[in-house]
Length: 333
Ligand code: AMP
Ligand code: MG
Image (cartoon, rainbow, N blue to C red; front, side):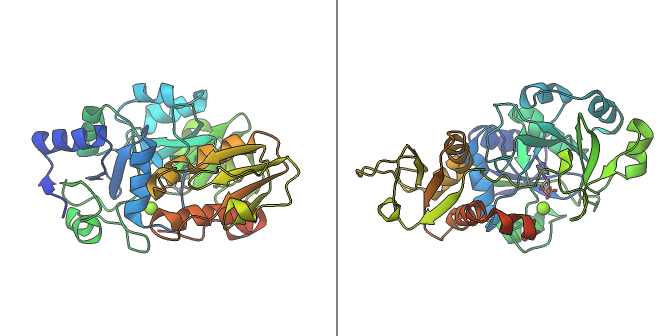
């Protein structure tokens, strides 16, 4: 059972040390308790998914203590986004930017964009500032459970899966954050939340609603909430089952490949067969194979346990992208 500590200078410092060394910490925000990891550490972020026992990957929101941290994480900051940050940060407004190379693919579930916000909670801000890292965090509940608004909710639901729980009292039970994408084509509401659309429009003018399933599916701000490779993918039990091979196929191997088959390129998820490492590498391996202009990517199955379920979910969506589009996000938690 993880220590449950009342948030004070000493416990926050201890939590910050855990974040810096790749651990995961539950902490209060103004919305709900978050399950945080160093957003720049893929393996630590894989642990967040593992702890939540979620059968799929979902992009995580990156939490910052100040605006200075934003520059390195994103490619550019559109002027309307600056105006909104001036007005509403810290607070329940998440902005989606084109991501920089620094942000690991697992944080964004392979998307080229990253969602960022600054929470309005002194404990969250202090933790992020002391750890010196942006903190990627979903809500601190296991898949299928309601979002926790008190530290003892986290303790009973996730106590064995996290390294430390910071008790900051009850969250001002809020809505989730409002998520907005701003790019050259305008401003798009991706998820309604704690900050009203009217307040946003009072600052930057009209915002298009891209939050519904039928809302402009091809709107730039709404490019699917999940990354899918453009190269066709076929799942096989092992590389030996791939074929016929023409020399234009890639292999996404679980533990590595030493056979004779003429794959044009091979990416290995985890030579040691470690599902956490495999999850941490999954999206970057897929991106590399996808960038080679191959005719087909064979993907080896991974064991259906722990993070293996989320990896297999991702591979199946890549194999049948139309299923991905139809189902949207089937695993709300
Ligand atoms: P939460 O459950 O409050 O942590 O919010 C996570 C939400 O942010 C999920 O619905 C994600 O789909 C959304 N999200 C995170 N990153 C992105 C992104 N890059 N683009 C669009 N939506 C995102
Ligand atoms: Mg959630």
